[in-house]
Length: 316
Image 1 (cartoon, rainbow, N blue to C red):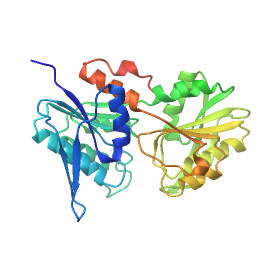
Image 2 (cartoon, rainbow, N blue to C red):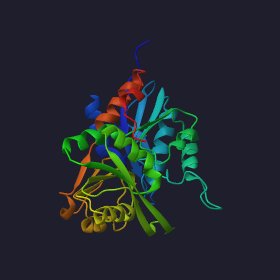
Image 3 (spheres, rainbow, N blue to C red):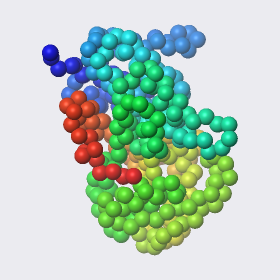
Image 4 (cartoon, helix red, strand yellow):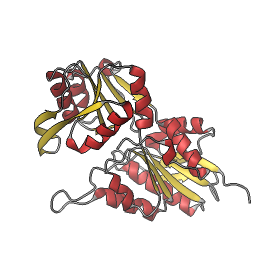
């Protein structure tokens, strides 16, 4: 029996990234289409045979919800077209912040999304820097949670910054900052914040010394930018030489760009898990590193039944 054919398809929200992944993998993107009815209903379809193939569907699930639903429909279509395996490559896993009941009468959206993907017929999930590691346990299929440290660490090393210190913008990212500090042989500090409500910070305190240091704030997600810009200001107020912000997923919602323009960050480094279009005033300060080569290599290893964990230096 011949080896199964690998075909990489894309959802519309991540076509830009899927094209780069396909080039790195060494095969063209599969042909697909989406019909959109006048009322907004969508109907994705594969425009080539997928019977017996291993189908990789690349789609981040950032808002609007149509991006998630489009992925679900593509999984269902692949299953009904007799694909051998259906692997969802979700660089940014939306709704990951809702991983538990943090107050009464709320949903656990990350678990609901996991149920939807599994019911649709997915065979495996490949994602990057899940907001909460326990989300892997919400699935009954294998989940490869990839770490962006393999992209960020070489870039940080290329900066050749003296007196480097890692920092976390909140206590939840302590393990991440400590792990980067270990990989880069540096110390780390923590910004302790207290919230009055979502996206609003009452006060913040710095735990650790940044006097004369070049500081890198590391996080998995930047949404409105409120927390990380306040942390950057606090770090500079405490005598740091410079401060940079690194994040895996650039949601950059609301007035995030305005905050960045007024922030002390000399550089904001992120990835292409979510597409961004910064204003001209920020293009020299925002650097986007691609995840395409890393994702292509993981696809290759999944197909060849090779170790994936050996590829990564864990950052959490």
